[in-house]
Image 1 (cartoon, rainbow, N blue to C red):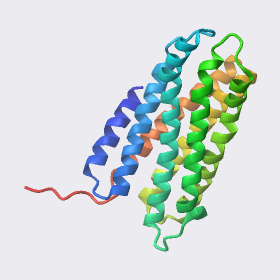
Image 2 (image 1 turned 120 degrees about the vertical axis):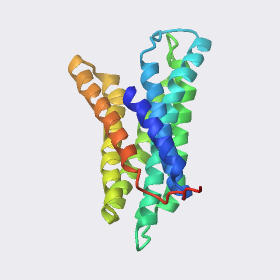
Image 3 (image 1 turned 90 degrees about the vertical axis):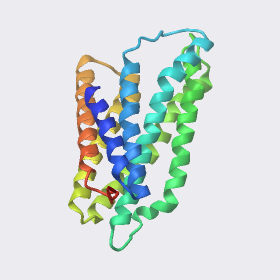
Image 4 (image 1 turned 90 degrees about the horizontal axis):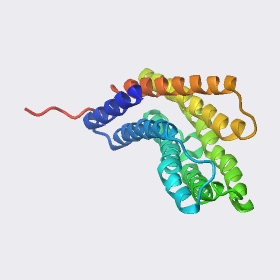
Length: 233
């Protein structure tokens, strides 16, 4: 949590000195990713009941599930901004996977997936949840994985085309953090759904620590990127 707090502060400071809107936007999305992930970790410490009424479950969804959904949206948005920056820095201006056209349908899938889980989640706290809520909960995972996996491939291809060392270093850190977040996502939403033991939890905890550290390194690495505002006396 301390690393994420420092990372959020650094990202906002970096955003304040960058002039180009696309670079400022990427720094802002990284700041919000760090902040939302901090909130997600805090909400994980709050005990929630296994079964409860629909009103209480709705409050829990807004307090716990909504920040997680916003965090997932901002992770995708950060990858999107990184791909756009990499395209902007490419001398040939190549459009990786036709990203300008592909990004909007992928954003739509992300929003549909988050909408499904927010609608279904309160009903999952009922002692006898309806079948549609369980189906919507299970449908969330494959729908959300589609844009995440496609954007991960686009990010990798963009990194290969970038000749700027600072950009390559950032994509290396951010890409590794993104893979760690995906791994935690699979553990938390797939593996634990069917099987859980202490060893898996330990591995997942190590993945979360790695993701946090790599995200911070990615934020710090963008400091030299983008045009900096001239200081006026």
